[in-house]
Amino acid sequence: MATVPALLTPTGSAPAALATDGRFGDYGGRFVPEALVPACEEVERAFTDAWADPRFRRDLDRLLAVHAGRPTALTPAWRLSAELGVTVLLKREDLAHTGSHKINNVLGQALLARRMGRGRLLAETGAGQHGVATATAAALLGLRATVYMGERDIERQALNVYRMEVLGAEVVPVRTGSRTLKDATSEALRAWVSCADEAHYCLGSVMGPHPYPTMVREFQRVIGDEARAQCARELPTAVPDHVVACVGGGSNAAGTFAGFLGTGARLVGVEAAGGAAITHGRPGTLHGFRSYVLQDEHGQVGEAHSVAAGLDYPGVGPEHAHLADTGRVHYTTVGDDEVLAAVHRLARTEGIICALESAHAVAWVLRAATSGELPRGCTVLVTLSGRGDKDIATLMAARDGAGDVR
Ligand SMILES: *Cc1c(COP(=O)(O)O)cnc(C)c1O
Image 1 (tube, protein in one colour):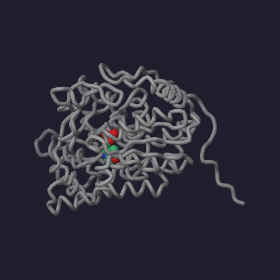
Image 2 (spheres, protein in one colour; image 1 turned 180 degrees about the vertical axis):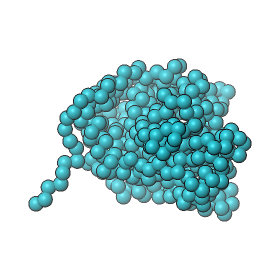
Image 3 (cartoon, rainbow, N blue to C red; image 1 turned 120 degrees about the vertical axis):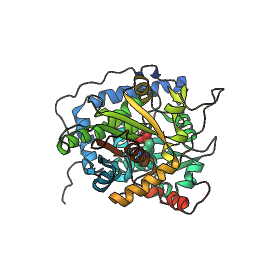
Image 4 (tube, rainbow, N blue to C red; image 1 turned 180 degrees about the horizontal axis):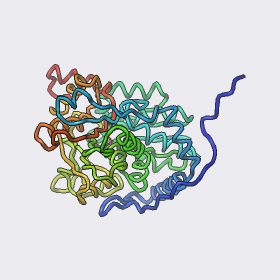
């Protein structure tokens, strides 16, 4: 019988250990119930150990290559660039397996779960991309997956719910609060308390208690590292003048920025106008970490409302809060109408239907090129965090003028 080469491999030299206390200026930390402290500490130890282990790195790199399809392309947006008078380069996370950057983080955490001897993954999901990625990684590595999803998101992202079920995951509807990502995250954290010895909580963005914001950024750094090397080959200046990414929890942006923080590039994070924790929020604590949070005058956590389900989160990763305070990254917002227009513009100029989330970054480029904030002749790297297949029903509803397409 022919043998299939082993999926995972052995040995090499050690990468530098990652020392962090999980604080980003005034933000981050680990604000969890007593019962979850040991579980978080165990994830921290396991991740620190794994990240310094060349075998773990090699196994992850291999899965990213042979399963997820990395490296993803860097595509010059030829016709859009000509129309705008600026050079636009697209980092194509929409081409990663399962259709978004989420798979980068999930393959890392699924490998970690195996290393910790956990047989099950718990996850929260909003638009369903993280749930689909988690169900995928679980199938690949022979783990079980339970995905918590708000009832409202289950209705508007039916395609992704069914994808998860086909992949063998259990989808648990969350009926509390706004029945979206915030509530699904609370429920997943609650569930973890009762099964932390057999399940790993596979969190989907750079948020939550330490070590998640750091760990997820490290798993997503592959976006920025690849893009940096690709820009060096593509651009005479090697580094683009501007680097733009959309910000929900902030993982695709954190991964992208990680590759460019040490350069002179101007970094821009684009929030949804209806879910802009940095632009409209105040410091507060949510889901185990301190950061900017949308809240009312009594400190009640507010609700986010965006056409993009993946950006419907009232908080933002703590590192972004710090990067906003220090001014290293400029954060701004775009509205639903600009986002819908951006999806269509990119589709018709470049033949790419991007996710509504990603279209926030594109929308900012369109606006900034028109206003002169992006001078003629400059170069802009835009991370396309995902593909738009999941959003086709929303686009159709918007075309047909349905009142609430959110
Ligand atoms: C989940 C998701 C986002 C938002 O999450 P971040 O952690 O901010 O990256 C953005 N785009 C797509 C396609 C997503 O699936």
